[in-house]
Image 1 (cartoon, one colour):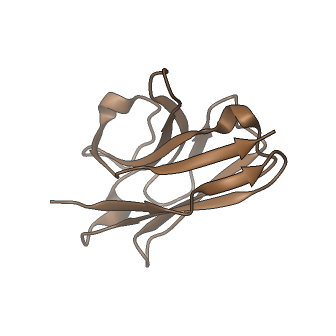
Image 2 (tube, helix red, strand yellow):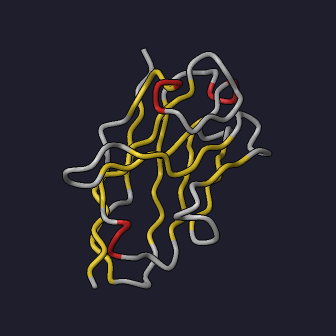
Length: 125
């Protein structure tokens, strides 16, 4: 059983920054791509960013491209999401997920088999 634990959320003013972390259990972390998704109140969960198992491939939603950076430290079993120039529309619960059976990136939630509990990000205007 894989456990994913997010941290780093909070309340920040528009234009500010936050760094989310997602720590994973298990010994095969580098074999799997990881992704960040978010869900705002009344909306469906949406893709934010993903990173391949080795960290060399990354992918971003258009809405965060140029503002967010995903990275991973396989020695620490951790994936990060650096969020800069935050906007009120970035307010959501952010979830990290582990790609099922693949180190290749995906922007589809159905391709992920394990999820964290989520961390709240609130951006005030």
